[in-house]
Image (cartoon, rainbow, N blue to C red; front, side):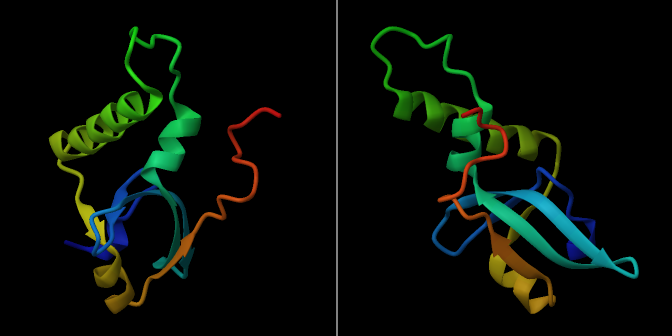
Length: 108
């Protein structure tokens, strides 16, 4: 699996099983140098609409379903899920989104 094929919206998984969405990439002279990732739960919380919420189902359950559906969709589309350690070994720096800052999709 080539680390150079990482695209925005791909998934990265850490050694604890947490999933992160690739929200940015940076190349230098055609070589991927770093990526920016954001926790998939965090991203789904700002991307997903919960207006169609079914009665009695908590937001947490709905969010978990959306996260699992995204992971399943990536697998169906045969997109690899990259390991953070594998990225670092391949000299690709990984930066996390600062979740204390406003999300770009949020309207204040």
